[in-house]
Length: 474
Ligand SMILES: [Zn+2]
Image (tube, rainbow, N blue to C red):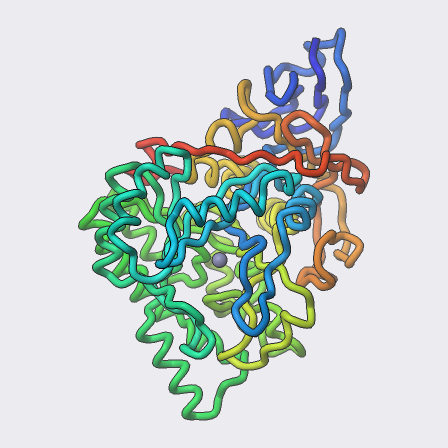
């Protein structure tokens, strides 16, 4: 007896797209069959006629229940809020960060995350380790144990991002520390996530704009510039070539970043690129709008030409994942800073990512359904070590499934969002939107209502395939 069949939809599997039935037992997919093959003794049949059936989205890059820099002990939205919104938007797995400060241990950072998430998430989840500043020797030496325990990815920054009075504790990892970290990453088949900008250039530009009294927020692309991305990506890639470490560049924002990644992959290096749907759909001209700082996410929005190149990379190759840099605050906090020195970065987009990528990618630009699944789900699963449990509609995979209605055409309103009191996507015109989400075999969102059990999300241990860490896949 089957618990659930999703019948009559256009199903996107690793081996192709077709009109098939997805058969589910318990929390797993057990078969993908020709239409109406399995007929008797089914718990529930969902009619998916006219819908596109894809693996649940996987959000590679979110800051959830994370400390907000600045006065007070404010934090970004917690797991229950973000995971709920994510399910409404067709995303069933979230990855955020366990922050390791130089003063504590990785084990403490992991425990803090576990306390925050366990029993509080609607969606499944995992955490990247985030290392800030100089990396202590004992941290490097213990890293392999955590990798073996399923924490297979580490994030670092090559810049402090903000000017000294706003940046809090140092984030920047210098090139010597980076070399040693990459050596460990390479040896133990982990993935290194890098926020890559040239700190000298960034800090120089903060000082220069201060001197010239040009601190308005819309000058942000002069601080976090194309040139800085170009120079920094290439330095990181040189060290990756010396050490053989795989690198995943978070929030690629400029054509120079895409080019650097492409050149490295052509040499056979295991290099991957992520962009954000807000970077691909908006550009530096939007900063000039009233309250245009609402669009800001670090590094910065770039030119319309850069945004067009990001779409090209997502739809046709060159970039590998669409993420959000989720960092959900309320409206008042988001627009409180008005200068390049004090704006609040980040974006509440975990809910809109899948729908916007479908609408802008598939409906408007003719991107293939297979590629849509790769950039919203499968590639993240492969690169972060969740495949094929996640990211695939295939026998044996978790039954995380999103149904998209390609006929929905409208402008998004606040009723479409289930988190925060603002969205940069309000009034955005869409064609195609997620209408149903199934998580490990249970219907989680249906007819605009959440039916998932509170706290039903599970932590996911991960393991990376050597194929992914030693050569460029995807
Ligand atoms: Zn981020």
